[in-house]
Image 1 (cartoon, rainbow, N blue to C red):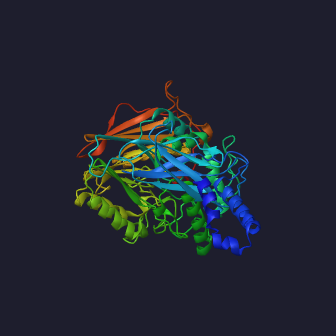
Image 2 (cartoon, rainbow, N blue to C red):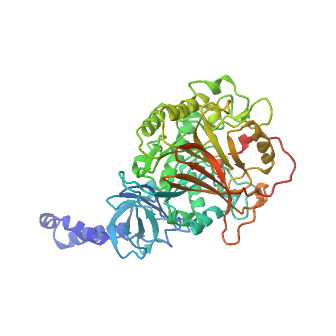
Length: 556
Ligand SMILES: [Fe+2]
């Protein structure tokens, strides 16, 4: 309502003030100043299109969603002031039938980001949206509300993704998803949306990081802008609502709560974490309840899809205790078994159990970062585990799986990122006893681009015999995971895309009609925990390089 505002504000100069100020001459000056300030606010000038980072939507609920954009011109020049951004929501892509509209104000303090929490819409349907600022109109985004809380939807289709190191490759996985999976209700991002590292000499052409390891707010903002520069990812954001959570690289590799990877002091690291969280919020379609307060940010939250599925989205970085026994893959020391080890912190753990315990959903999904199931990475004795995963937090895992079992949670499913490879695990009450009860199923999705070093494939595969609860492993493919959920079964389809051979693995041949290959399909029947493979496995061509010392801690 920019025009109205610029016309209304000068009227605040009352007749009495007008006279007191000495009549027309003074009033005209006041009016002139106010009018031009308002015009700049409502009708700002940009050197070029400020919608270079695209549009996004997220955190869908039955009557709404969050709409997002962040203004930045290609030249990076922005008016150093607050600006007014208009938005509208329509029922058709042509934007003719507008059902909601409004204005948002943004400026340098918010990195020119816009978050609109749209409410009052109809359940379970597509909506379209645009932003407008000055003379520029954004691309038309598409999004979708979820079914109502009392609804019994027949089916849900979603995808999950993680780990998109810009330097490791192009976002073909997003391109394929945007082109071939248009029926998805939403996409879940499980973290490592950006990577904090400096430029790598091995970066694929045109994908070098913009500057050294990032630490300040300006650094994190610039890095997010670099990542959003990818056209395929922008297209995925434009088409699907995203439910996002972070892992470590949005801040610093393998950090745990207040403890950084390197020996940065606690106060300096908390300043860095605050900068990273602020930039993360600014760049994600998150609701205001996730707005960071200094170094703290409430990111764990819950979504439901009628009574078909409930999603508990976890944050396993901000509240976790330090990796025990030191980071890396190793034999467990006593600390890994300590009851004090936590991934979630006590408050989130309570929240998780309460949400699961009170759920009436058929499928109960925990969307989180690192592998929940045990995996002994080295064939033969002694057993060696990755301390950054739940394997370093054994008591916390036992509490969670024990709860799923004892509380009789309906169809527990865990979806996981972090490790740049695809896995299916049975979740056992006791991983050391293969005959123990299977309580749920974990699907671990490969990365969008981040590398799984080719030389690690053989040792991880060789260790499969020591991990009978693991039904599937593939580290050759980058891609995404599609899940089709109905009232009889859950189907997980691992999708692989051709990637740059920079990571040492040879790209698979894509199907001629689609840029994504089905690598494997697994099904969980309602009421029968544990996944069963359906159809064949596509095996990627393998790296034949020199064997290297095996250190899965390098996979992050
Ligand atoms: Fe990662």
